[in-house]
Length: 366
Picture 1 (cartoon, one colour):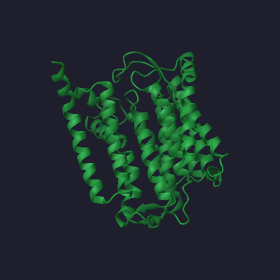
Picture 2: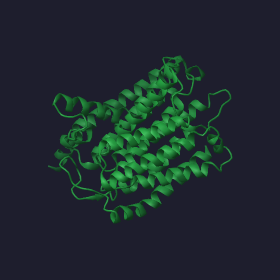
Picture 3: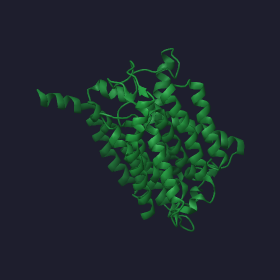
Picture 4: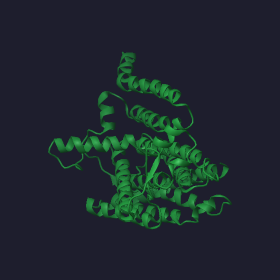
């Protein structure tokens, strides 16, 4: 655990310290997010923060290679593949932050990054399904891997609409998946907590913690596509490294947990961004628009329409993200009915705060 704590600290420190330098570069290259009709911010803000996040992750990966226990994660070449994929997707995002690429070019860059990771071994080897691993033909699993990466990357990009929202939700997801991956790894035969998934989750958690102080409302720097695409790819790499490479039969958390958690945890930690994507596609399709056409009806826009302030909306969405991610992971440690009871209470609290907090705030002001 101490080596993982060191990784979190290093990733966070490098990200935090390099963000002002990246901001200066963003200003010098005119990498600004202008105020568009669908945007919430009111003044042009520099973007390119994903470069600082990449520097934090890359530094953590280099340090891990020198640590006595974590150096083992390099043995299979997957971490090198993640670094290569991260470099590609961060570069594509950085170019888009400066010059705004068309969607075809961005999609091609995302597919290239996902393909490189799959080529280096970061791919689904099987699909866990109700307690068993379903092995599909190799090309099908590679295709599914690329689709998972693309879906995760664009889900994180979709939710990046309020200061600190996306990086905070990804940080919560990384924390939840770190706890889950670390606990599952201890049940292996022989136990081995030093895994690719656990390392990536720890590094991503540190990067998010280091960038959030610069990005929380009012943000001094947006992470831009260089950050949203990068965090989506890293989160996908962590989930793929564990979910599609572990036999559910190895779990010692009980029959129900072994059957459901391998699929439930990855879906739960990304449910909020995925839900936003699905709702956007359905909404725009029914309105006769292109699914990727921008609008002001994302989940974070809805929160503002209800009457929440910028920070309050972000904090409540954090609460929803933590409830979904950490709540699902809790089934690995607590009896099912106890976990369900706590989740039910927290769910009720989240619903009440989401629906009624603006009214209480207005009434107190009056």
